[in-house]
Length: 243
Length: 270
Image (cartoon, rainbow over all chains, first blue to last red; front, top):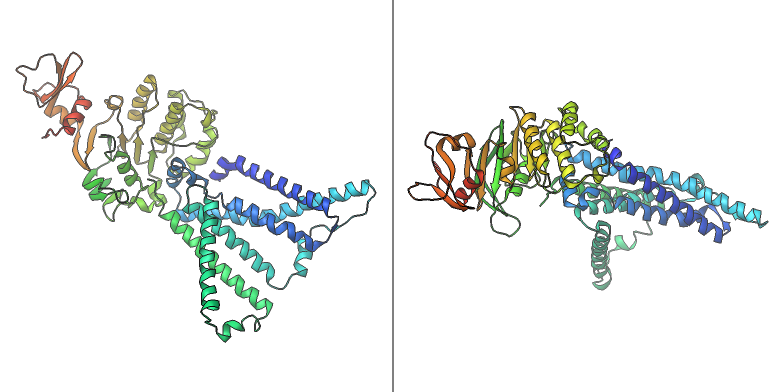
């Protein structure tokens, strides 16, 4: 509550920026693509959600960007767990709940406006409105949950970066994550390809598994990764010092 | 209230800033923490408030380990750092947001101190001058009624009338269960306020006495001629000398500046 009193201006500005971004991008894309079905919306939704979510989660713990603010924040009489939980809810949970609503409202507003403009010019357009229910119908079973946990995992990495890095946390987290990713990928490439360490279980893994099972495994892995990342953020916050 | 035992502390690979430093301080005092630049005053304050981690079991404040930053501990500690950042909100909004965290926050005391400092509750914090913001923080800190108030250079940026009001409000706002630690270079600003002095030098506490004890043991005076005077410590001053000598039964006002210089220059106190 206290944070909301102090941050309401920034929050309103961020919501305004997100709404403008959704509307302008949807409008421009639809204006240039008048044959637009429900599945095409994924091309707008996924990049917008990831970019906006990363920017929002990557600006968590704004107090840690300066020494003076860090000092004040750490001395607020609230436990580290409450602090991280509040930030997690505000920066990730609220985003995951609110952003689809904004996408639905302002994406469809843009679709309506584009349709009206073309109809005014007596031109025929075939633009399907955004419907999450229809989108979910076409997807493989379990893919929605995997997508959700995937988004959660990505946002939590950005979130953890804001506790760890003082300046430019999003850029530094991105560089660091890429380094880790390529190191692991390079290692497995070496093991599998160059050293010819092949195993029938690995080779046949893709053939013996159904898509639902694959999505379920992916979801569990992503959830475990998210939990580890959240714990890492918590302990980083707990041991934070001001030098 | 504060127990520090054999504290060793250093930043990274730098040499020890504190070398087996020990200190014990109880509630009911206003303590002046003095030391040269880089002596570690701010670091000591951060260690006491849990902003820096001290080696295990070397610091306890109100029976708790500060670095754990338990809410019950933080509710009783208010720290005004030398440099701070305040949000762009009105004083009243800030108070509404943060007073909730301090169970013994006294709104009427705050209103009174704000009047003393000539601050308007509808002023936006970022529109205030550095000194006005500092006055607001002092007012807020005193109104929290925290058991431990830690003020790092509180008079920096305050104009001359405000310094006098500062002394008045601090002296008039405290109760016996509170301890105030004031770290400052401006000894004149706190001369009639503090009742104990701690001098920190080369990683150790070299002086820790109450002003009452000092005024009983020593007298402070000025002279143009040192001949025939048995002084403990002397330093040149415009037009003559400042002297610290053994008390002769007539209590004098303690010259903290002279006392500090004497301590730093190796004078052994009784």
